[in-house]
Image (tube, rainbow over all chains, first blue to last red; front, side):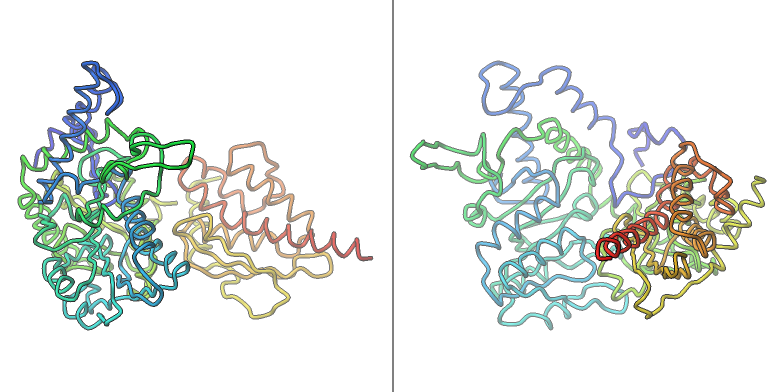
Length: 398
Length: 150
């Protein structure tokens, strides 16, 4: 749907690497070009017309994000450079201050690097314990397994809403309820979910949430950290500088502004924030549920057809997102993706930054097709056709 | 070189590479390649004795170009002196990077003379040569140390 809004699709490209980054609709690009062309100025400092216009355009995105994820207050929305920075701030600022030796953080082996490494750093620095909630036979996370893994020492559960290799949708409302009952902080990496399924941070009792604009039709370089108001107030900045301070003296005294501003030192990516706002409006104009339904229908169709091809191994046929992870038997994933590129089909090969999933999956590298709103059944048919004739793969690859 | 012949040689080395399988013999010098790539991951071990490369073995998971290049490099370097090996690797890297090179020393490695047409595969071809280069550095360092002790 809405293919006409994505000029890049006029070039015969079949784009199926949406988990890495999505394409950008023309309205998002235009909105950013408009800022750069017609009213460039910095935020929060000028009294002239363009500066006031920039302030309005920039600040209103906080409200757009707040409504999109159903936060209580726009002060709970922090602009960051992306989900990676958001997750690093959560672990290396807030939890560095608020966890103690032997406190447990539960994650899974299918988490993205940015929801693993910051915790491993804390494990070394603060002697906390990082433990892994087991995945089931289909490499999915179940509420039962979460419950089984919780101990009296569990202080944090930090998981992706949708995992980026398997694409399983985690039941964050049930897990959030458990966290509330047991007084556990609940961190959700929403990078793969925020533009695919609805999110309600209040309903799911989320303590912190992280996502990036570029995986939701927006620009690179900007993302969101959501944190409950009382938690953000306690969070110390990792960066200090302009915009975030109230006052500082040569005596060494300084005061910071309130959250979220104290967490946003320096000139932010203004055009990108404005672009993010436009991307969210665009997604809302279609409806997240409708997008999910579309990509899941296409996934089911694709999986059903790929299952008929004997030399294809599927790793996540039952997960309910638009992600299909597979390998051609005996073919290194990168060779498969180079083969598909020959037919102008863009997919991803590798470990998808989930380097410890190999412990469970018993294979390091896979091919990942990730579907989004502009993909079509005809594109799936083309992928199926090309994979069917892959016995000649090396004639193309070498 | 004819395209089909080139492909046949590469494919043969990919599907039946020489010297696959690591050794526990500690006289071999070890080097891994994964730090330079997200996805190809090759371990190499080389035994240098009496002024010559006596053996090279490898293992790992990598694409057709990386695996075949590892195999052909091993085949080409076996029995060579340190200086000959350095010369081959320098010329091989120059070929991949589209610089001037001496094709006479490259033997079968010449099959990669058009890999530059696929820029994203240059790194695949370079991974094993970079690792082997590091091993040759270790040998050189050891030689230097020995000299200064003597």
